[in-house]
Image (cartoon, rainbow, N blue to C red; front, side):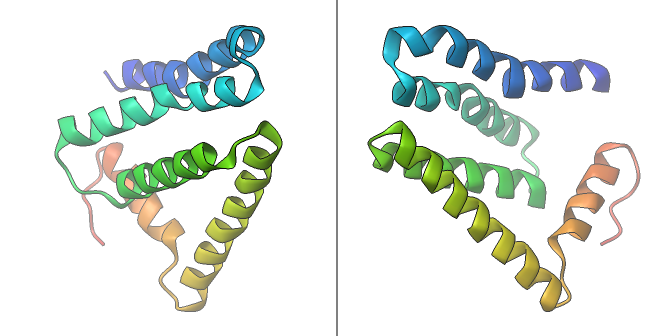
Length: 125
């Protein structure tokens, strides 16, 4: 059952955006193809979050980062500005990650606990 979820997530997170980018680029242009290629991942992530009805750190982080990235993409106005916004957003996420390590509450531990829970181990944190 878990292998089916993995294959579905690979298709939605990697396959569909690639197809939209490859074939939609000539029809819509770079900017709109980049915007539209994020839609399947956002829709699927929100669907899985609502279906599972389970609070988890990884799900909240993914939804937050997708919504923030999409909002910045919509405000960009051009493909070049969209790419620069992605660079600055990556710097911001790196800063948050490093800050969590400095205060000795690394996000990596919370993410690891969530992934282990998905593999069947009890949540101990």
